[in-house]
Length: 339
Image (cartoon, rainbow, N blue to C red; front, side, top):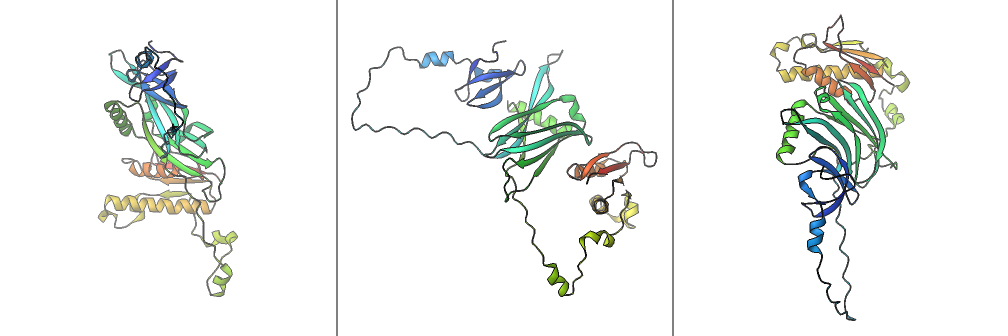
């Protein structure tokens, strides 16, 4: 191979010199320039020797005379780094199959922090709602943090990339934590890969957040004054006594929810089903139920997918599963809570 790890190379489009830190495949490598590591194609770099030779002067210049009134030139200011948030970056690793075609073997995942703040993070990769990989660490300002590799074939299994961020140095004005999530569908993935091929780029990225959020402050209420004015004020410890009873099984078939459903549009049907799901989900939490079964049916799977997307973002959900049940077939999801 032309290049080896440790070689000094010239980045052609920027005329900067860098060091080879990893060989990805026959077409790509990882290069470090001024502390920043990024992927480049082999045809985008060259050895710097020719450039050095052409810039080297054959004969030394005569020393210029210096005068007392010479003004010392100011040093140029360093280029300001772009601050635009925290990103999840995907690097497709290509290889050539037996027919000579380029195919994607795997994806290398990096967490890219393009802010001036360090963060602690917990990263989880889930397939069909089940955890497959988990990592806890911290990412420093303007750091490209390698997470792991994913075989390309696994991306047909509804991958969910879930993150929870918190500040390394807690700030009373900032949120205690921030959750971000990405769901990639195969069609979206193929489109992204085709786009970077067309543009001759090495990676594609998804921004997880631009700015870490501020803490949400709740207004305090003087319950004594409210009671004096005739309002009913309940003891929080007895709040469940005033709630609607919870259900252990919720059937979201539209004929169970509305009598005139035949006159409803598809949008109205799904909206009513999701509203009902949210209602009994919250009741299950309020009554500290350990589990909740949601019957969504099979159909085209739209309602099931919407519910699963909601569940992946809920902190109180320990896990959920959509598997065969003799009572409901594959048309129900069982949710397990954690308190």
